[in-house]
Length: 330
Image (cartoon, rainbow, N blue to C red; front, side, top):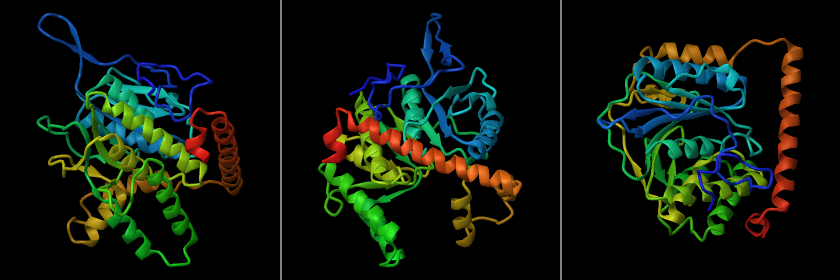
């Protein structure tokens, strides 16, 4: 397994490794005990923000953390750190994504966070923090998920919602099955957990977190090589189950957040006032629905397509000479 103490990602290093390819813009926050010795704080928040839209959304998250919980360090992994203003508690790291798309890149932010802190709360870049995080929350070793479900139940529901002719869903299910088999798991009989990956906490577990992150990385690459770039929850669930990294559900009392998808469901169920978090909907919409000239939209679309094919080819070439060739291709 690759050690998280290795801070540089060499050209020869495997693409699934969570070792850091990023350079910090600030040093690790620490406090002093009565003897004057430095000690690393126990908890931080982390996120990953790639692309102009998600960097802009993450800036709102930075403002939220600074306003509501300024004492909690925030780690940001991003392709353009110059878009953020680092401080003693806002730690910005440059990261060039190693996957085809960026959905699995959060594992690098989490790995960095766990190399500095005992626990980290991962928040998607488009999530908002609406109030201070309570200081009395206790995190057990492993993963604490705000929202999760039995993997088989989740997948069956996904298939039921899809039409039998829905090729992308059928293909995705096939890849998920292959991922499970790669690590000796059975979707039907094993106790597997799917987590909603927009908000979850990861806590050290005597080094088992390193095994979890490494296997997540391998499964992420396997999924991307088979065309499944989204949905990191499957790799997370399989990796955790295989290495014995516990996953538990917790409503996280006192953690007041905004996620547009979750909030819409709450409103439909009558669990939330439609006007309560209207300002968050409007702020997100303003960023995501920027009006651009037609020529700029065309350039952005071509750039996105070019990036996809470049990273697909790069990943394919890297894995053809990887020590994990058999895992990826046989």
